[in-house]
Length: 304
Image (cartoon, rainbow, N blue to C red):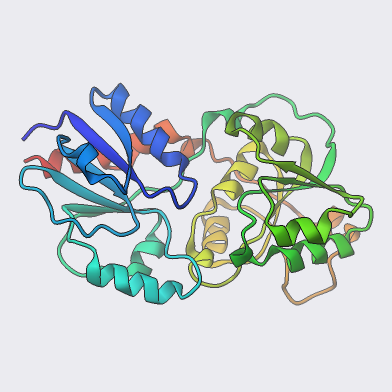
């Protein structure tokens, strides 16, 4: 069969910038690609490929239509491991699977001889500007989700206690707990929701990027997109230690300051003397990444 149309099926339970990236990529390569809500399966009934960002998919495959399941992350708390087991039991068998990284593919442990590939997280080219950065307006920036499952308040409090006088920019909608904890702090600025096009400029206003992920499943094996964007902008990264971050550091010869490890309490002196090394990530620009990801070859294989 030949592929002309691709339905990108979004569960709308998380921000997934890759959905729009895929749509533009497929359109440039001659396909009709449209984004649909997962709750409306009739909408994509005439498409050649249904590409699900998982989630659950209980609908039996349709003869003559390719079904692809993409797993960007594992299930979020509460009970994430149980949710993943349920997905393995109840999700229908697709024609192929795509995983956000190798650690995630290993953890999900799907059985069966289903073609699979790893599609690493990418970076919008707007973060890769080589323009000279101005003097920092803020010492620190945290960008991304602030939901209760991440338990950010103790980490932010720890950082601010160790760095008196620090100015911290929080980019994104805060949880109620974050707002209540820091709304009166003189060094904390809440940007609220920021259009994606403005995020590179906001990150560039800081010297240090805070990458704060719980060291538990599924967060510790996920690819943190904001961390990659910190690297793209050239920030010095202060991070909680997770399996994925340590692997990235080894592979890219980076050097990041880890919170919560044994040693002296966090201080300005520690940061000023730490040998930060922020590796280049130009090869992770979305267009370049998708061209080398194996996706074109996967589609060709599925149509043989």
